[in-house]
Length: 457
Image (cartoon, rainbow, N blue to C red):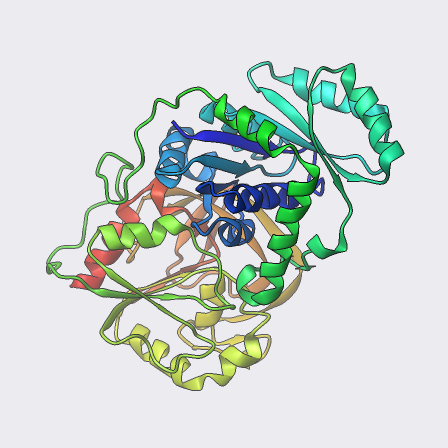
């Protein structure tokens, strides 16, 4: 039994991240062990959550992983904690386009049997807040909205009017938050600037969020609401557990037993990753070692596989290009058939160039910043055998980028896309699997198992 709350909002921009991160920090400062979670595929908010709690920020995405894995993944992340705080995504009832409630905050709250706290941007309303809250409370009777936190409240008089209006709805006000410049977090083309790029500033921002929530919110009331959640009857997900997922096809033959070293890119340029990926690689027999393509001139000693996830290489293109030593090492590793799993930012790093600057040159393709944001869930099938999947393996993924790579697919593509349009995408060559598609390996642990087996050969 873990006490738990879901922090939701009527729409994006209402203040969910500020309130959720601040609540995590405030609870942690009071001595509670806090488990941080984020609904959806977002990689950036969990970094702030981790800073607030000292624990890995974890994603709960019913589209990527399936509804049946939401409670097990939650139980895995929240094991041993006193309370869990789950930050929602977009508006509370918004989910995967054209798929009803799938992947919405409301659906996740129901799957976790968790009470919801609604964060309302009250900056341009008074009595109308009652109609807004009433609509969200009554829309789905299975969603239990246990309280409201009013954000961006202008004055004591404004607060009084809002409280009077909400008395008619019968939903308690559990917090009132005023505007504060100290809690502002800078943004750019894909959202907030990741924690790894801000260091001391991010620490100060999270501390300010925690203090803002501590001063303006009823922490005892919020904790009591979290503790009112009923027991969650679900076994915890376990990395490497054979009961989870169908597997990514047959394993390659001849894999030797051992602990291959898998080098995972990190540092400010490559900050997008799910905590479960490293857990799965480790569970299937790999020794995972981090490296920073901005600073390290060679791969870790004994590397037999490389994982390069998402991030912002376009921001660090000059520095990545200047590290010629590592670029040559990666190119040689891939040329010799070493297993490389590259996702989005990793795809760009393996390209011939990025915004005109030389990259690793593994792929006969060039990347550049584009004018249009590509964003959304995808359904994909593996076009060819690769280090990650056998031909015909079906996975769900997510695209999130403002860059363009030309060509968009190699002679042997990585994926055939079936949602929202039919196309091929990505590159499979020698041991390399490179694609824009972000996937969550907990949905199919066979991906990690297959990759480790390839590395151990």
